[in-house]
Image (tube, rainbow over all chains, first blue to last red; front, top):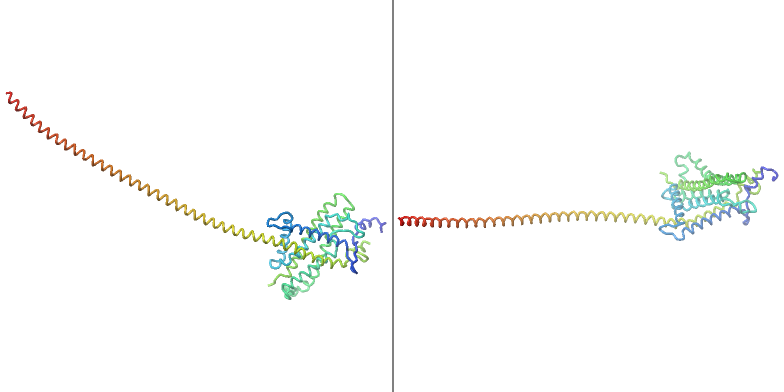
Length: 241
Length: 153
């Protein structure tokens, strides 16, 4: 296949190649875990540095952390509502921060310089396993939120305005994680691919605006994922009258 | 070939699900708890403490301002009263001094009048005495002249 001229660039991009780790009889995508640990490490470092010496008059990193906290609180409060948002704010915030730092890390850090035996480093959110994991966590969360707050009355939601809604609401439970995971996965992977293809074809200048667009998309996707997760949880804990 | 890569029919591919999925989920759940302990809770506490502080300080300041305004109004009233009292005192004093002046003036005038009257009466009586004396003298002189003339003849 290397003889075909048009295949060569795509082989260079190594789409769908993974660095496999074997853990017992489990197979893992090593490159995803490596970057996710870097992302988690960066987040924890920021948080530890920023909360080490907190004061009433915020200084330095504490300002940034308080801004983030306020932003996440507003997001959770508007979507989930005044009563339940406190319980879910850490989850929503973690989703937002993890996805945001993953996306921007994937777009800003020149991972390509680090050679792996197979596959390449990139945003953890460009791997379908990560996004499906996040989306399933959201599904579990909103079920748990609804059931823990309302008990079995949660299932009234399925027949809420009329019982005709029942099939649609059941289908929604499947489409919600599906759309969440594929939206994030598709956007981030597509962004990485577009940048990679453009860099390969025109190495100078042209990829830069696309990279900026990628940063924008990355931020928006993190916001969308967190907002939708909060909205689903809010929908589950909402009281119908 | 590309389609094979994308669909992951062989090794790898874009939709290659394996143990990465559950482990990533566990990782994110752990991260949620860690961030809750290290970030959301402490920062939330600081922010809410500050909000409380600002609210209570504001309320206190408002209370103090109200107190100050009340005191100011009271002081203004007191000042007004004091000014009125002072004005009244001044008026009284002016009236008193005026009265005293008039009294003194009246007394002095009447005294002057009395002494003038007395002086005039004295003058009058002296003039009267002088006139009668003169009459008597002139009578005497006249008699004397008549006697001398009669004697010379």
